[in-house]
Length: 72
Image (tube, rainbow, N blue to C red; front, side, top):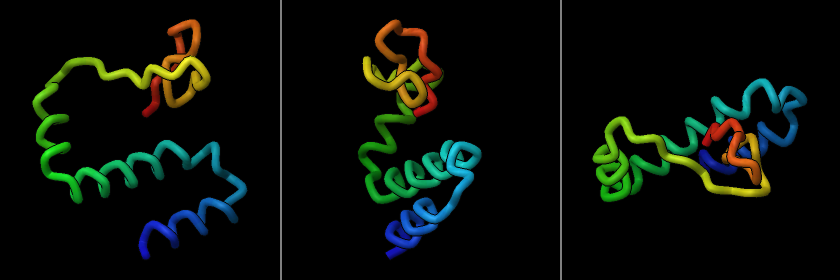
């Protein structure tokens, strides 16, 4: 239910670019709280850089030139 309400807020919000990183962080934290095994594995990475290796997305991932923002 919470997720559906969040998605509805996103759809009607005209300032998506200003809030998308904050929303993604909240969603990922919720996901990790629901998946303790995945949360533990992520914590074990410590300070290692984790990249979203997406050649099509240079905002959430590293992009095709591998110089993207990697916001995910």
